Length: 332
Ligand SMILES: [Zn+2]
Ligand SMILES: [Zn+2]
Image (cartoon, rainbow, N blue to C red; front, side):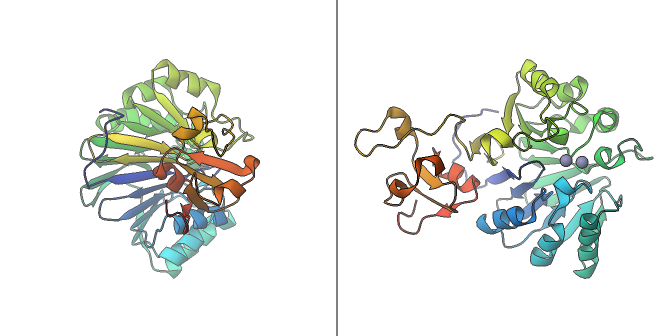
C-alpha cells in the first residue's frame, strides 16, 4: 500500500483518532455515511463538541472497549442524544458511577446490546471483526485485558483497534486470532504503555503506521520509551495525539492518507502581510486556538488572531480534523 498516492475514488472511509487528551476515542465514517464510534474518551463536553462539529447526526454502532473512565466518560449523554442502533461492550461490569450511567442509558433508551464476543459486522463494503477473549477471561488486569478488540477491513485496507489490552491478551490473540492480526494501521494498546505491545505481537500485526492516543505530559508517562523504541526499531511510523492532535486517516480501500490537526510541532511561523516566508506559504488555513472556526490564511479575521493563539493547517482535512468548522466569510 502506498502512503502518498492521491485519493480520487468516491468511496472513502474516514477514521478519526480524536485528541481527547489522556484517553481513547475513534470515529469511523463509512462511504454511505454510517458512523461507528469506539470509546468516548475522558471528557464529556469535549466529546459532545467533537460529535457536533464533525456533523455526526446518528451513530450506527457504539463500542465501549472497557469500563475505564478514560474510554467511556459521557457515554450516557451520547446514548441519550444519538440513540445508537447497536452497542457493544465486554460485558464486564464496573462499580463506578460513569459505568452505571452508561448501562442505565442502554436500558432506558432500549439500545440493542451485544457482548463483545466473536462476530463479523457488515456496514456496506466495510467489515468489522470482533476478536474475542478466550474463556475463561483473563483475571489479571481484568478490565484492560478484556477490552473489545476490533479489526476493520475495507477492501485492501485494514486497521486494528486494541483498547487497553495488555501483554496477556496479546498472547491470547497471537494464538487464537493469528490470521486476523496483520493490518496496515494499529491503534497501539493502552496509550503506548510498556505493559502492552510485546515484540511478538507488534511484529505479527506488522503495521505501517502506529497511532498512539494519549494526553500531553500525562501522569503515567505514556507512551513509554520501550514501546516507542520497539516501533521505531521495526520501522513503523508513529503518530501521537499528544503531539499531532486529532489524526484523520482517509482511505479508498487501496491507498490511504493521514492528516493531522497540528501539522508541525515547531512554533507556527509569524505571519507577515507582504513577504511571507516559504514556510508560511505551505500553510493554507488558519484558526485561533480559542475558536471553533477555521479560515483561509488570508482571511481578514486571521490578521486579528494573537500570534500565541494562531494555529496553521496545510490541508482543509487537517483543519476539519481539529473539529473546527469553516468560516462563513472566507468559506474555506
Ligand atoms: Zn485507557
Ligand atoms: Zn483501561
